[in-house]
Image 1 (tube, rainbow, N blue to C red):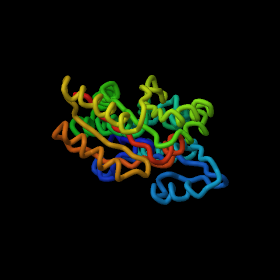
Image 2 (image 1 turned 120 degrees about the vertical axis):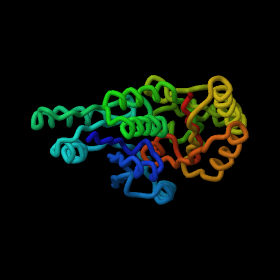
Image 3 (image 1 turned 90 degrees about the horizontal axis):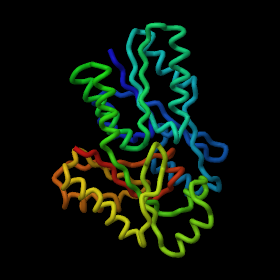
Image 4 (image 1 turned 90 degrees about the vertical axis):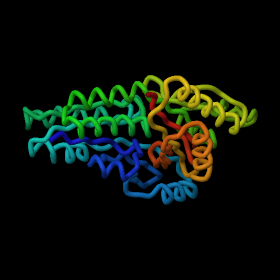
Length: 281
């Protein structure tokens, strides 16, 4: 058997995780004295805690021990492993998994453990993982699954806008001066992921206009080749996310997933964030 494993920052809908029998290895958030496994707390509970906390959150990768426990469970019984994860430029998760892979091969020389760096997170990672799951369900072929994952990575796009620049500034991704200037001028950065790292797509005056620009980018891909999958993502911002789904439904007749982004990514961009991910046909 080929066992598909991913990390928690994909934020895939639970029903799809269960449908394709995908194991999830969690990342965690450090909030003051607490280390919080993001799979062991609801997003609502975490963001309520964050709102009251005097501490700025930081994220942490899985430990070698936690990854090894999951991997060895399968290789010890002769199964192969296919692991997809958050960009190696955003987290040490890939490096940890590679260390575990090398350690386990000393014990199980014939073990097949394949790692795929998604070069992103959230539902860009999620859609890539699901593409691998579907390929395995059809063929049970490792090479075909890896190809499907990489093809999906190459065809996906992610755009998002934060509610506040506070978390970007405090996590070191934006200078205090830039954050202050942007706030005064009502400049909203539209962010994306490029070459495995968070990057600026463009800067727009007002959140309303920024949402329209994201919608126009999606519309352009719908009209030029089409899209196969769309997710609207939010951080503790469900009402606006539902409104955005309604706007997208004016453009295309597809099921649009609503995805709540968890604590690890939320620690870096903050509550109120709104984003959209899609996969081009």
